[in-house]
Amino acid sequence: MRIGLITASVLPLLILMCGWIFKWPIFPNTAISKADTWTIAGTALSYLGFLFSAYAAYGVGALSRKYFAKTRFPEIRSKLINITTDMAKVANKRALDLRAERFPSQIPVALGEIERIHGHKLSKKTNATTNQYKLFIEWINYPGNRDRVGNDATVYWDLFRALNEISDEITAFLREQESK
Amino acid sequence: MAYSNQDWVNAITKLIELSSKQEVVWDLTSEYEADPWTEVDRAYDASLNGMRYVVKSSRYRHYTDVDEWYWANRFEFEIYKLTASKAYVRIAKAPDLTTISNLYAMVEDNYAYKEGALKGLLT
Image 1: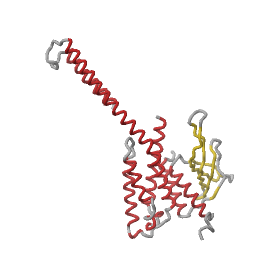
Image 2: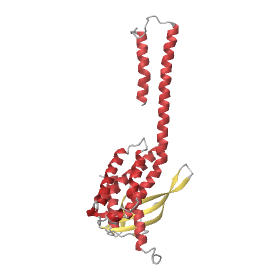
Image 3: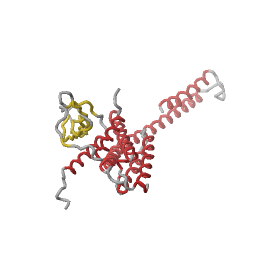
Image 4: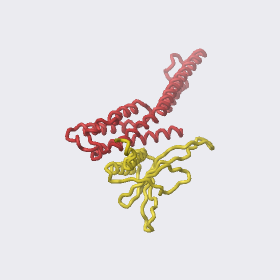
């Protein structure tokens, strides 16, 4: 963003100066009056003002996104920890009984909440976890798995690990934000 | 060579899996290497394949300023190995991972069940 701002401010001014010095056919007359000089200077300064206003607006947006993430992430992390703790505690239940547990419905909600927050790099992980979740739902709904326990299913522990990875990433993200 | 966080997550998840199957049984313990900066609230240990695993719930002083602090909670996971002199020596300590809190919560629940915490109240 900064490089873009510098380029957008310096490049047109540079072209304008070169046109003036080397008499490029940018200006209508070769003889520029004092009034023309002030008009050109005014235009250039207005352009710079517009660029800095746009940059300030972008900065305010970035700050707002940063503080939104800082406020929301601790709560989402607690939710994820509760989900994985539940998963660890009920792993010895049958697929049929796991359907009645709360955590299968809480997972997509927590992942959706993460997706709605901007300014993080968790999208790849949340997408992968959503796929793991779909596999887990297929597993608990498959009639042949009714009496199989969560413990014996690789999908169960893959989902558990994926959710914990997201929790750890959020912890790292919050620590980084704290030290900034 | 060193273990990555992913290795630790996989190992602790395996331990949770084994504990859930009752293949690993946990008990309260007070045998672990002490750290003067940490207060251990509770610790459990379990043995498997010649290794002793310890999971602890601890408190440490989190300083917000030079002289301002508050008690912060953390969960720790350590691995001990029996040496030739019949003493357990800590050989590894896990990094700060969410999986450890899952393990601790599950171990605490299993222990309460094993000790019959609600025995006599559920009839």
